[in-house]
Amino acid sequence: MKKVVKFGGSSLASAEQFKKVGAIIKADESRVFVVPSAPGKRFSDDTKVTDMLLHVYQTAADGKDITAEIEAIKARYDEIIEGLGLDFSLDKDFEEITNALKTEPEKDYAASRGEFLNGKIMAAYLGIQFIDSAEVIFFNDEGKLNTYKTEKTLAAKLAECGKAVIPGFYGLGKNGRVKTFSRGGSDVTGSIVAQAAKVDVYENWTDVSGVLITDPRIVTNPEPIKFITYRELRELSYMGASVLHEDAIFPVRQCGIPINLRNTNAPADEGTWIVESTAQRPPHVITGIAGKKNFCTVFISKAMMNSEIGFCRKVLQAFEENEIPVEHVPSGIDTMTIVVHEDDFMCKEQKVLSAINRLAAPDSIEIEAGLALIAVVGRGMKSASGTAGKLFNALAKSGINVKMIDQGSSELNIIVGIRNDDFESAIKAVYAEFVAE
Ligand code: ASP
Image 1: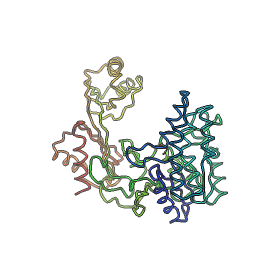
Image 2: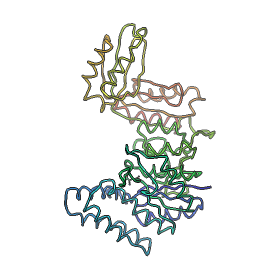
Image 3: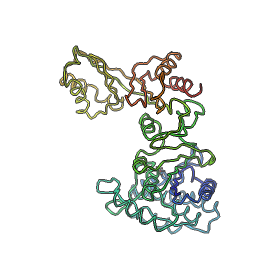
Image 4: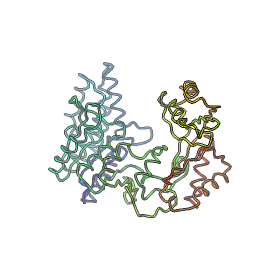
């Protein structure tokens, strides 16, 4: 049994957090490859080291003095090193980084140093090998991950060492310079390492006990989800639940490695398992509830629309021409509704309307803003009858008017459109009906 363990910024924000991480790693011999983030926030008003580094980069790029900012970052690391009682110093690294930023400031290089330095401390603390990600993770000309070269190089390197620390978030660009993933990208590194080492589990440690059924800012103390499939997670993430970096799913999913989300501050909690498929019975018919506000509906009607072949295509073309992503298309006999996000639509509204008129010549078009969408997701819905009934009943009991309904034939989710103002009460009502019954 082999595992990759990735720790997020808050798990590594201080010496105290490092100690918890050390204990977690040492508690299980199979935790062989460690992927650290940069130190995150120690308290809510704190600044993440990555943000401090991005700021230094800007200061350097503006040709201003960076000494004080570098000192502040160094102090964060020195505090960790001292707190761990390590006989170890990053003085040389800081000298190098300062010189590099002074002579030729590069944004990705600057941002990546947070993980690089934290990785060095982690390796010294655990007494295991440090692998610089710029030697094993490669990007191609288009700035995308070079999967073939990365997997080959990384697999060979990992096979050489029993245990190792591989810092998250960056690799080497085609131009021979350090390049980072987008923000939160250490999740992606963890996933790539898991794939290359063909491990059994990818453990991703943060400061919550896994994926929660719904947003804790709306429902107090929602239950965590024990098992969720990749497909369910995709539906929830699409609807706004932020769990992992999007690109972290593909590498592990492709080779059938499950992800276990765990809490560094409560290591005894089982966390959430993200899996391809499972026979585990979900404790509730629904697995999760997520939603987003500020959608717009474009309601189009035309007599005998149904028999006009190509009508839908023409309407959709109007959105395509204006590069507006379409979220949902519920339709009736002589009507179709296009649901789009206000941010994408508002600024091009009139252009789209004239394009629809030009291309499809409908009888009328009505637009309405202020719609919220809620996705009720669950593999358990397939075998349970009455889910939709229960859902609409819960909303009706709370006096919420449903403006749109969309259920895919996969029966994995039901999406309802309601007014923005009803968003929070709708989520509470659905949670109360299905979970806190
Ligand atoms: N430290 C980087 C960030 O703040 C990457 C990560 O934590 O995953 O985005």
